[in-house]
Length: 399
Image (tube, rainbow, N blue to C red; front, side, top):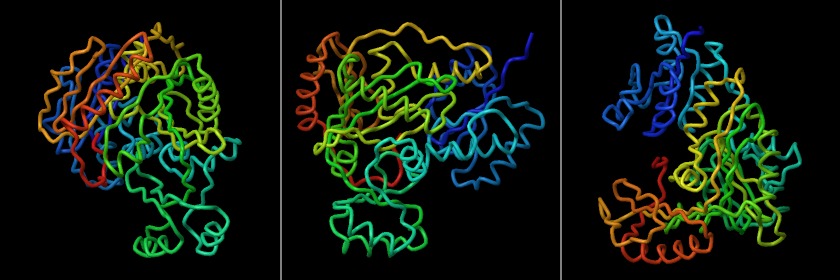
């Protein structure tokens, strides 16, 4: 009988509890490596064999030394980054310790916006016209041949963090000058107006075995930059949009090289030519409570299935649980109140009330997709009146 696997889960944000719970349910030993500031976070301590804390600013070489020291007495079989910002740490540790899993090259396809675009383009997947911010002459040529506006994007941030809309070449150069030696960590991309979608997937042995296709209300960049109500909702599986995005997502996952795990990919449908363009993809569970929305509609918990796939490790067949086919939607807002009261929202379609300081949020479920969209429109108006707070765009993700 083989010994139980030992997982080292790494996260610098409070998330991934269900992943750790599932690992323990499957008989694994589970260690958590997190930051000192999260010592009192809501971790599933009954499912953790040990918890290790590190300073938030501990350099990567020191983390490698610390984990290698732990491994002297604690055999580690799997290393998993539960948050996007810990993927480089996990990949570096895997390569240093020769532990199975995603290495640094593939990791960059999911963390570096330039790398993922170049990889997608190489596999003939449409992306907005872009250029790395490396050579001034190349940048001038790009600006004179690709019509604006453009967006300046950090290559290794998540969501809409640090993105700037550029209206003219004259507006770009002072910004690049202010970046100094950090210029090469950015790319410049044509801004394409349109509707933004996300595909949340479970991947086993390079095959997408489950995917849920959803459409945002406002583009996330607009919400992040200007404030507003965040909404998203699942699309009918048989719709033209969902079918096209599932096909495109399968091609993307193969192109980026994800072997097993989960992914959250975003695409935009251009208002001008109606083509879908790839925006970005992360090898993680989607944030902003998207996983909760997917689960109430489909019965699939992305964290749980990710854990099961990691445990199987390609050596045992993975079987997806039965999938339900309801519709779901999500409405979320930064709130003026520390603990906003949503009890006045009492429709039977409310499946989950989100509890987080200074946030109001609801997850909806119904067999009728039109009912979901009607409720989201209604709730968005009410949230704007009753809860909405707006603050300057953050420099770090909130969750």
